[in-house]
Length: 323
Ligand SMILES: Nc1nc2c(ncn2[C@@H]2O[C@H](COP(=O)(O)OP(=O)(O)OP(=O)(O)O)[C@@H](O)[C@H]2O)c(=O)[nH]1
Ligand SMILES: [Mg+2]
Image 1 (cartoon, protein in one colour):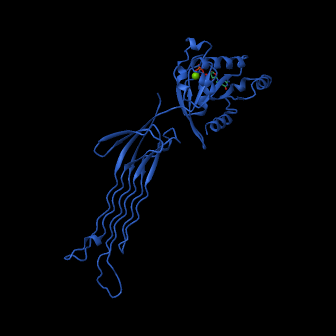
Image 2 (image 1 turned 30 degrees about the vertical axis):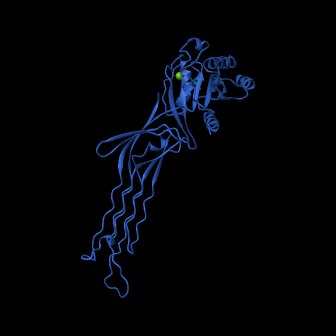
Image 3 (image 1 turned 90 degrees about the horizontal axis):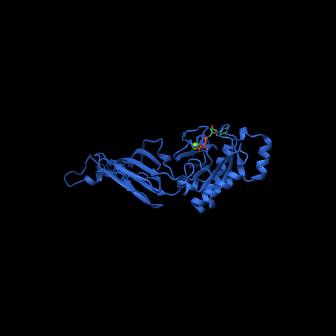
């Protein structure tokens, strides 16, 4: 299994201070106290959503703060409360909170829209108008606002890929993952270089998704040939499948049939998924064979992971299928 992790602090807003103020009106030289209360500090909530599937927003920030409450003012005016902060986390995230004393708490967010108060903002302090008594009619003190709650947070999310890659060994699956994502898989010119599934996160300006690279599949994989087809379970939940083919081979169309056959014997539903046929190693192909293959496989995409030709177009296409 693959996990995404994030670590940061949250700090709810501090309450605003109470005000010290006295009524100043014409003909009332010694007015009573009218200092208003401070506003409450903003709370911090976590909201689970299906709209995101990685802990991206937490990567480059150490502390998330809600707004402080404003101080009270004269004429018994209460300070404005601080704005709450809502942090979106993917459904499935396990949240661990650790308070100042080291006490820990764990909770898993499982429902889309689930909203939980994680850190409460501090209450505002009372203004001096609360403190007048018959003996002390002009109190020169008020209360300060209270600190908001703060916690260390650890998030953990099991990653599920949006996109899976299948193909024969040596077709360039890992090379493609390397070219488009943050993952750095092993790449080599022999078969079965990849022996374990690997995930990578693709990040572009307008989209983000997770791609799974799995070991190559050969004819008869369903009977255990090569590394077998057990790894196909890692792409069973993916929304889009990329069929990666080596364009320098002269039996590409046949390879597609074989791949389909192996996928089908593992789980026929794999054939119902959105798929993109990718002919890789375009840089090694001559114009004639490109033309020939294009005629044969009109809905395929020709790319080179080496020169990156067409790779960005491919990503755009994947993003469209996912959106
Ligand atoms: N010229 C050229 N070579 C490529 C291209 N893509 C991959 N290769 C080469 O093809 C070989 C296999 O690449 P990999 O990415 O390891 O292939 P794979 O599909 O992950 O292979 P397995 O893990 O064994 O299933 C390597 O030597 C790569 O450098 C390409 O677009 N052009
Ligand atoms: Mg590989």
